[in-house]
Image (cartoon, rainbow, N blue to C red; front, side, top):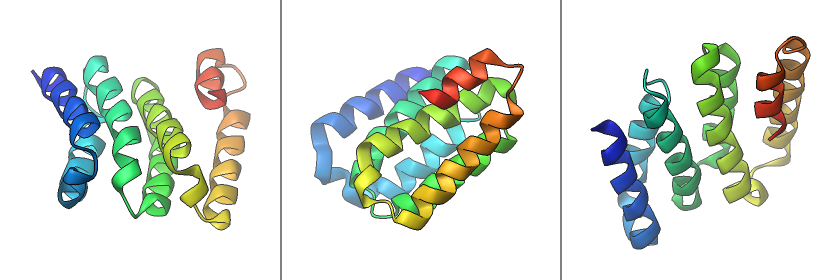
Length: 128
């Protein structure tokens, strides 16, 4: 049910666009909570939706830091969803992120890559 709801919200974001700006904080909170859901389909949809929603969000710097920090400390099965959301954020708002945040993100991702020496799947997630 959650996956279907997130799919509908994703369609709504695509159709309504800037008309959803007043609801960005609530939607962002919902998607962030769903990134830690036990169901993989829910996590994946939440990550994709969050990447799209960031186009409407004025606070991309804060969200980028939160996603990177969460990815670093999350369980392996949840970590990929945080990285997918971070990828979407970078693709959607990379030019709006401050240079300091970009540098900090780069350092955090490099640190995670060093820790993932034995885990090819995780390194692939980091690289994409």
